[in-house]
Image 1 (cartoon, rainbow, N blue to C red):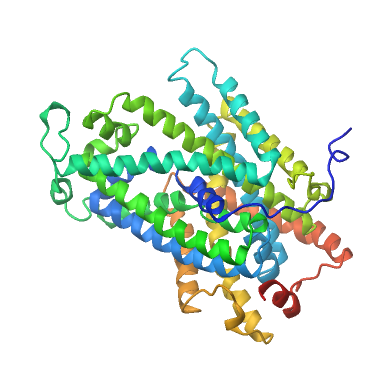
Image 2 (tube, rainbow, N blue to C red):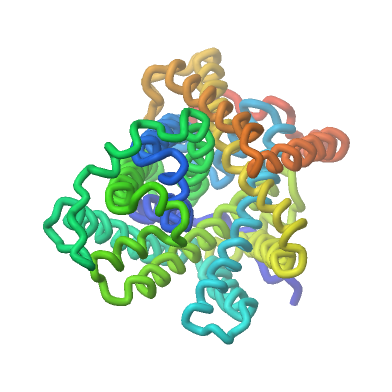
Length: 480
């Protein structure tokens, strides 16, 4: 029996609850960027600058999620912003965005598997990394193949471990910061001395802008709520609730964690330690601090890989339904999982993983650069699509009060979100380490436009899919 024959044409099943959506979005956000990369942000922008960076990044996330909330409640489909871009901006743009986002998450899965395998060498120093990569890949593939609910339940527990670790860090670190817990070596409680020692922006505004790029990318993953909307119970209730919880709790976790880190670790030391969390736990006297954080970071990596595999699979499934990918990728098994799309996604992830072993300094770096671009372009498309959707909806006679979730202060907040997201994208040109993303991403997107207009558009026209696919009656059916 071949792959195509073993699948059926069942639809996706709406089995995920609010707690699943909330944890899925956190699973895509809280990863090694916070646990490992936060020290770099503090060392470059300074304690106050780091907090400011996370607040601004959180504001951009907040505006983007408001736009996503309106769209995904009105149209809860698994393609999320790729589908909205296709319908309200243009199918060529939707085609390019979908493939860029799918490739981005596929490569991210490979990166997380590779990093997880390397972490296992702390406990099993003589074991080859590829064996752990294979084991984790099989486990994540199996969880995603079982059902959307099995994936959501796994992500719930993965994310719970990360949140518990961050809360424990905030409480214990905060207690040490104000002298309620004595630190090892008789060190005096620092209170707020690290904040006053260096001034507001010790390395200037340029350093702040460069760190904001990194911080903004660390918030990406919250858009997974929209992708999971197609499989959520009562999307008009679960999506708004999940978005509100995700925005405020993510900002709370990140800002408070950075505040405690910056208080306990001097600015110059923060940028040279592998994990500032390990340093803080060890200085407080937590036994086996390094091993505990190694476990938490391992969980974070697998959580991101799990969410990424889900997101990429659903994006591929949605594009296939839009006639932008092979029709066999719409096949869904009895558990409501697009199995063919899952197999192709894990296959590309494993091929990317091979380049991490054999072409780490060339092909793998190129792939990672494109991966970092996908989510940012996705955020731009979310804000642009919401503006286009609302204007089209009103122009065709729709009433704003019929929308079950409305982005407030339209069009001011969506336009601010669109401008800020575009600024983050263009600012990549000013960071030598991130510039490669533009050098590779622009030709990739251009190639997608070329393929769409000379091949895919004719196929879609043959299937009756024109440029303007969504009329007012269809909107009303989805909204009311």
